[in-house]
Image 1 (cartoon, one colour):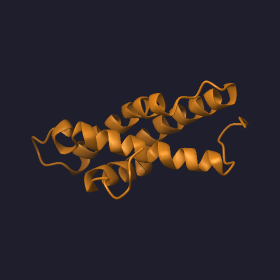
Image 2 (cartoon, helix red, strand yellow):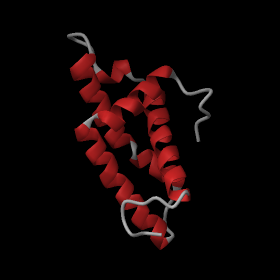
Image 3 (tube, helix red, strand yellow):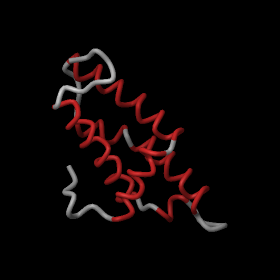
Image 4 (cartoon, helix red, strand yellow):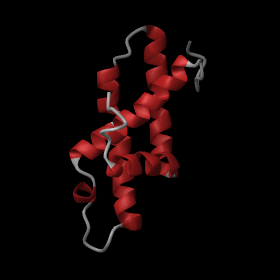
Length: 109
C-alpha cells in the first residue's frame, strides 16, 4: 500500500480524475463489485486487486490527456507507470476502507 506522504501529485490528480470521470468511474465500479464478490467468497487478494485496477486508471489517464493535455501529449508520458500504480492503490485503499466500515455496492458481506 502506498503511504500518502510518498504519493506523487500526479497520482493524486489521476485518482481524483478517475473518481470524477464518468466513463472511468463506471469501469471502477464494475471492478469493485467483482472484488466485493471475491471478498464474499474468500478469494480476494489485495495485491492482485491493485493490479486489476490499473485498467480503469489507464482509461482515465487517456481521457485526462485528451481533455487537458496539449496537442501531441501522450497519456503515458503525462502519468508514469509508478503514478498509475499509486493512483490504483489510492482507489483500492479507499474501497477497502469503505468495505471495512461495512459499505458495499452489492449484498456481499
